[in-house]
Image (tube, rainbow, N blue to C red; front, top):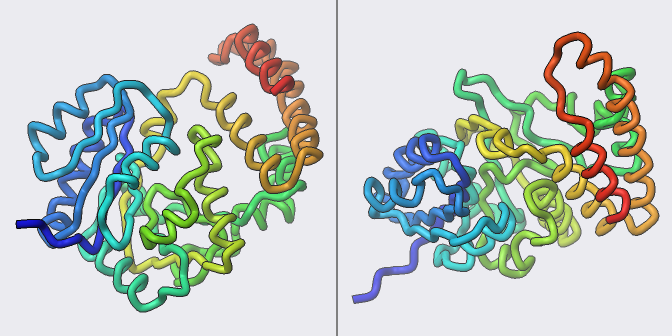
Length: 306
């Protein structure tokens, strides 16, 4: 006897987040019992997450990868295995609050014109996270992650980019929420071919939202649906976090704004790098920990020739 097709498939990507993954899956058990398919993609983190899932959550499908392939590829592999009409993408450092999934599904069922729906993310302390952002543009590269961000933190461009006029308490369409928690129709995901795997870890969600916008499929922010997000559980373990972020940002600007935008982003990154290098001796003399300069220079050199 074949099992009926589930309405929902939850795809959880995990890398070195065993304890948080356990909590995430505990929060998903009622969702599974209500009929949802749950798939965990363990991206070769080597922390025993795969064994934990097998032993404690036998009801969850597990795709344990032999080598680390990165967030975009791992999520695509999990979604390729999914059977549900809708996909709920989740980071392993999330906890789904009661009724959140049903609220997301109810909106998606009633509004097929929307491409996706995102919940309100809150920290472990219950504080709302300002998670939604506008799309980056040329001026964003100049004002964000450069000395200008510190010199003029209240610039109109940063106000726009971080949507600082939005309190994340009211329902509305938004340009780009994070895919830490995002629900969308599986057919639309397949139409878009999922995440663009040229993005390793960052900006893949921005690119996905940009492609949804190009199809005139808005993304709804639904504050009534609440998901706890611990944040940075995997990225905080990366020794090359900054280098990866800049590389993926460069990929995004080249893809959506052209080759000249790539040159512009490199120029803005050079400004940030020069400021960092000039401040490096001061931080060291002040006793503050700082990334060694030699590997930083190597990664910057590789960025410039990429």
